[in-house]
Length: 150
Length: 434
Image 1 (cartoon, each protein chain N blue to C red):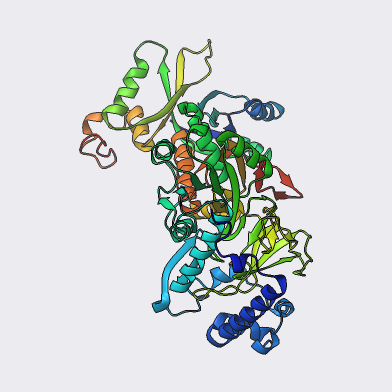
Image 2 (cartoon, chains in turn orange, cyan):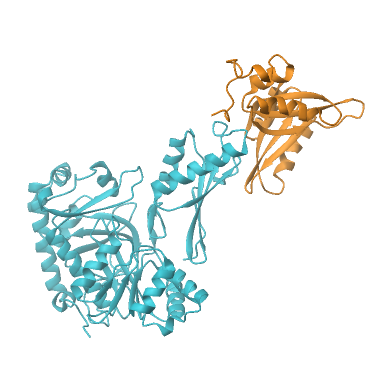
């Protein structure tokens, strides 16, 4: 499933992350999943929320640099090997995973959910949903030749 | 040891100097009006004829020339000699990628060598000196300007150019260098490196430093003199006028003697353009009285200074300018390189930022200037991947160093985090305690 993720630029300094979280709190926005990619100077906070367009508007209004990025979301059975199985499909087809992170756990659910940012979102989506098999990827235009092929 | 390189010129009585200057001014104004389209149209705009300039006072009637005029007439529009007579071209970095171009005839090179030789002698050098020239050679006037002066003087020249500090120190020891020419901040860096290498500067033969190309203070002089055990002399110049050698400190270290038989100085109020009397601080305006390739009439240097005409204890009668006290524009001098905030803006616009907010922070770290450029990240520049933002940082850094000729650390910051005063972003924070 393709879902919209919010990416927020955050300087790598004390209090900066709290500022973003404070705005979300004020507007009673619940974070369903999150991760931070960071360097010495800055980080990119990535969050999954309900109504991402509305939250983007809220954060922009509070002065943050925000972008909506489509990402793949996979529901997995909560058992060993299930993530491996999905990621293998992607790697066999030459899809690169830029980053991956998990949803907040919900003990009532029997499933785990992860978010993946990939370089070929449509192909990843087809692979995960089973609309496209790894084995036919090489012959199919939609499943482009993997970059390691040559 | 020589006290003067050109005693008649350097100790000329005031009246004789004024007559000489007035004669040369009249000559050059007449020549430019007849032969140089830029100056002719500038004078015609004011309704001026060469006959209107008779005395030195009359110079006030003439319009100023600015760096913008040089850009507008890039590259050769201000040259006053045919290219067949031009034997050398130098250039300095410009704000819009267009450098400021200057040309010299054979005679101009002679004048430059002469004033540079005068400067070296005033600073205490002689034929016996061994001078290590650690200014950059090339389009920058620093290296070649001092080089020609030192050769004319007859000193032994080591044209090492800038950089490679360990090698500078090795040659200084092995070759018996007695004088070094470089930027004052680089001198401090050399001193620090020598300490790290366990070399006592006092055990070398180094006695004199010819320092310029960037502003520096008395405090810095004391630091250099104490750390290197030398006399640190200030040399002033700018490529638009000729290069290093326009003015030099003498043994008194109380202002820089301007070779005013070649370069006529005025101090003006930078806002009104009004000429200020001696002793008042203002912008230095220079007129070249003898140059052929690219004469300058009332060039606004943007350097702030004060003129003093009392006779100096060194015996020179040449007018003295104070050490440069600052700038009347927003130009920064970083490691001897001229940097304008607008250059940074142009780079950011070129990278696709529509309304860049940025800030230049200049610090002195371990005696070397360090430039950090903060860039507010806009949504059009923002990508979701760390790698993308790092690439953006690298791209900005790469373009900045190629446009500015000085390397900068680039830091992306959040929107509206750069301090603004009255809505306008504060473009420059200079933390150097000069």
